[in-house]
Length: 520
RNA sequence: GGCGGAGUAGCCAAGUGGUAAGGCAGGGCUCUGCAAAAGCCUUAUGCGUCGGUUCAAUUCCGACCUCCGCCUCCA
Image (cartoon, rainbow, N blue to C red):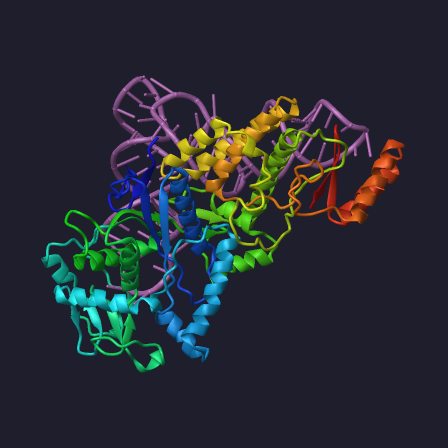
């Protein structure tokens, strides 16, 4: 089955065929954060979407080069640097650090490269010089440089590839009216902004005098520098379609970097925005959440990632706290199924039969902060799935869904049908250890795309323990007492012990094979 | 005003020219000392409204209503 994407450039779903003649490598660029503040949940929807796309392309066997820029110089940043009486590097460094903490808490794989605008000034200036030399950019008397859409068009290029623009019908917003800069035409945009007093120390030398880059030019300079003048995929939030991405095309193609017949970018993918509690996020409505706000409410990164990944990326999504609660329950169902599979699979792997209870497993659901890192960490070497190939059914159905423009909702449907089927089989003892191992391997394969980090505390007492946690002796002792009381049919005492354990954060599940302890 | 997207159960969310995936929440049952977990059953004669095309539409067409995005630095 071929992978298909909705390409904003063609406004249609197209089969994905990489530019690489060998058909092996894929260049992917996603517009990253502007580090002027903590990123909010809407920002992260886009980054989780990009992470999903990258993981799925890798799942399909391509080798991806994932680049995400960090915009660390821009009007708002400069204003805040000034207001806070600090330096650009100090200010942006702080928010960049926070951004990557959040990014990894959501289980996003780090891009292979994360270039910074301020580290690419030389390349940016060179690109602007090229545009000036080709006559599609001009320096204004104040030392700013603008891109001329009229010249670009008269050179036979198309401005308005990603959306229909009718310049005659354009109703300029208020933002245009304050004429800060000396543009020739209202639609022209700044490539280089001449230094003004308010910029403070934030400026670089250029052939046109001191100044700083415009908003769009950095992405053109960095993406073409790292991925080449033509690359496969460019992603971002839907609001970036215009003007940001349209201008990127204009700059990159206007500079004539591409071989003839090649576009700057072959596939443009845009993620829809999200609403929070049915409304547009806004601070005054009290529905404006940064990732850290949500973590502080007790939700963790995997729950938030799961929720962000329940809807198709091109649909606007309603993010709610109720949904987050539902995400927690849904993940618990999945964790439960996987833990039982490990119990079944684990009994053969070491050649040892399960000796005696207690079996222990569970998830630390109240964990606030996921550490970063890859989703497979901690469960590779000892994973019983190493002994078997993945059970094919789930993987195939999952891939069929994802091939359709990353239809994640449908893919989750397949996953949860598989969970039910697996639970049903296990409930009737119809899963052999090798089958369980194959099912786990199938999950691992699917999860290489979903990126749902494993629940921390997995089965411990069966010989497949991954050693991440031990039962405190106090807990073990209480459990023993409770089991003894049950055996003696002193249920009152047994229930008291159970309540006591619950207070300490552990629950007991009695199974035919003995008691299981779960961390709440 | 222009361009684009969307309206599916209490909530979230797939999907299809032939009669509605999945998750959460709710109800019932089985299992259990009781629980928990799991399983089974159940929850939209209905897919914004009104027309049209068709043997058949939620799915195609038209109008309307509502919501959302973009229209110069917002993911």
